[in-house]
Length: 133
Image 1 (cartoon, rainbow, N blue to C red):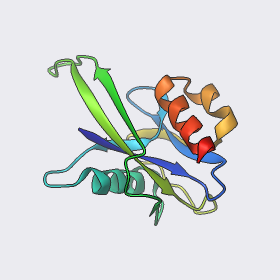
Image 2 (image 1 turned 60 degrees about the vertical axis):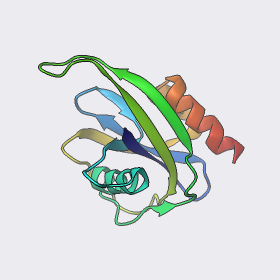
Image 3 (image 1 turned 90 degrees about the vertical axis):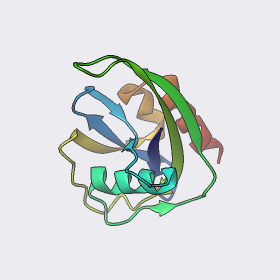
C-alpha cells in the first residue's frame, strides 16, 4: 500500500506534479508508508518531503482516489502491485518548492495541461475529479 497526495492550488485550477527521477515521468507526490503510519499521514508526509512545502492542507479525510498498478521487476525486486490510496490536499503555489533527491523537477501544472505531462488514466481521472469538485 502506498499513499499519495493530489496537491491542488486554492482555485483548483492546477496540481503540483513531480518528475520522478527513476521512472522519468511526471506523477503526483507520494510513496511508501513508514512502519505504523496511516495512509493519510504517509500521503501528507510524502507531499511535504517531496515538495519542500512548509504546509499542505488536507481537504477531506475521505479517500480521493485509488489506483492499482503493476511495478515491474527491477534488480532483486520482483514485480509487484502498488495499491495507491490518494488524498486531496491544497497548498499555496506562491510558497517556494524544493525538490527531493527522488525528483528531477517540480511544477504547478494547469489541469488543462496535465495530459501533456502524464496522459495516464490514473492522472486524468484525478484531473476530472478535481474539475468536478
